[in-house]
Length: 341
Image (cartoon, rainbow, N blue to C red; front, side):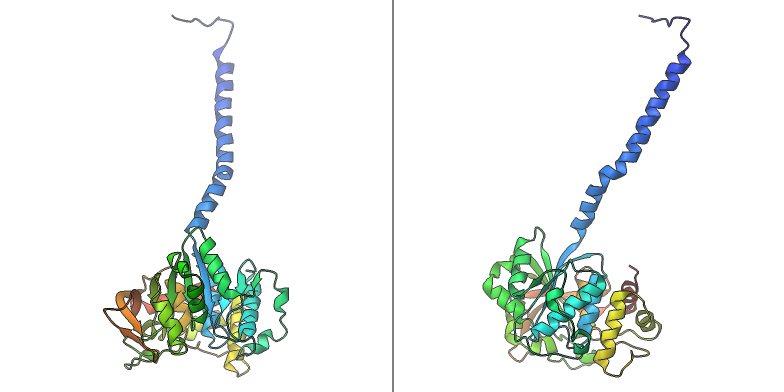
């Protein structure tokens, strides 16, 4: 049926009102959409980050400090816990805690590892007056149990990055073998085809030689494994302009890193032109990417003497045996430590 509008009513006001209402609804929807989507987007971004535990003999060689700084500067990684390993437990815990404070990351828990509390190293001066009891975050006196609990309670698989001898992890596996089902292992361990400094002679690499029995336990556990042996990690340095960019950075964490490097070096001022060998930084990189390295799947057996031998009958693991682009890794390291991504 045809409806005829009464002649005294103009259609224009009604049309304008309808249009205004429609525009208002559109503007309202546009304004509210970001707010509604923000929690979901934030949750998705968080879910993509990799939960990580770092097990470290920080305070001996300075490369552990570089590695922790890189880890804290890597947005792909959700650092849950950092535990000192291989004795000197109070010294290592204090170093970890003070560096976390410098980074503004007291949301990260500190774990006190196995071994005697006594002992120090080349960075002791930096923490001589630091009170671990005043760390604003959580300090776990039993770092081994903290590793176990963090893995078993995580809704996602945890990446366990180990950059030292591994008695903590040997003990954790003995207490709770099931942690191997909820974690993957990424380590700076071994020497496969090259030794220190790219030498042709395969070496008994320090982290393995220090405690072969602990490494044997870790290298035969059920978790997936990726390692950077000396073949790749033993070649990394920052030199020239790359090093200078880090040395001169005003970022609080990076400044703390260079202060520790200066103390560790023991010559009163930061080196002018180069870092030491940055072995452990490669393990941190492999926790979130591997495109810059050549990865081989190899059976690796740890001998009682502390050698890592290729053995087809041994547990298979991913081994970063060569660099595809080491300068690109150095560039990434510099960007992260100086505030870029």
